[in-house]
View (cartoon, helix red, strand yellow):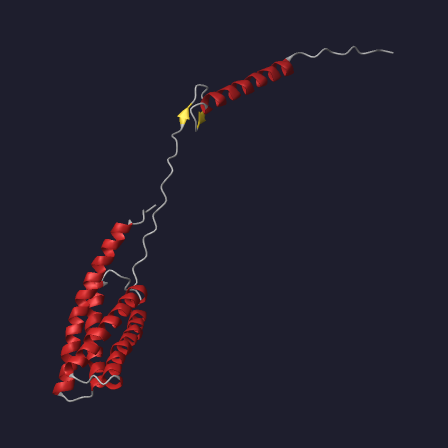
Amino acid sequence: MTERPSLRTRLRGLAHEVGKFGAVGAVGTLVNFLVFNLCVHGFGLAVVRSGVIATVVAIGTNYLGNRHWTYRDSDKSRQSRELTLFAVFSGVGLVIENGTLAISHYALGYTSTLADNLAKNVIGVGIASVFRFWSYRTWVFRALPEPVPEPEAVPVPAQGTGAGGGNGAGPGSGSVAGTAAGSAAGTAARSGSASGSPRRARPVLRR
C-alpha cells in the first residue's frame, strides 16, 4: 500500500501552493488596481462600475496563472465544469470585493481616491482572495486521485519429486504418493494370486 504523506510534507506542499497562488494574486491585484484607476480617472466611469470592470479583467488574468502554473497538475478532464465553477466562485469574490467598495464609498461617505483604493484593492481583495483560495483548491482545480497500488504477487512453491516416485507440491508429497502406489500394487498382487489358485472339482453323484 502507498503510505500517506506526513504532516510536514503536506504543510510544505500547502505552503508551496499558497506561494504560487499569492504570486498570481499579486499580478491580478496590480491589473485590478491599474484598470480600476484608469476607468475612474481616465474614462470618468462610476466607482462601482469601474470596480466591476477591473475585477473581471483581473479574474481572467488569475485564471490563466492558476490554471497553467499554480494548479497545472490538477485534473484537466472536465474543463467545462472547471470553467463554470471558476466563474461562479469568482463572481462571489467580485461581489465581496466591490460590495466593500460600495459600502465605503456610498454608505460611509469615504469618497477620496485613497479610500476607494483601500476599500477595493486592499480590504475587498484581501477578503475575496481568502475565499477564492479555498474555493479554487477545493472545488475548481481538484487534485488528481492517488493511483491504486497493485496487489503483490504471492510466490508459489516449486514442485518437487518425492522418494516414492510420485510428483507433489510439497517436499513430502512424493514419498506419500509412492507409499500409496506401493500399497495399491501389493493389493493387486494379492488379488491376482487369489484369483489364480485352482478350484477343486465337485464329485458328480451317479444314480
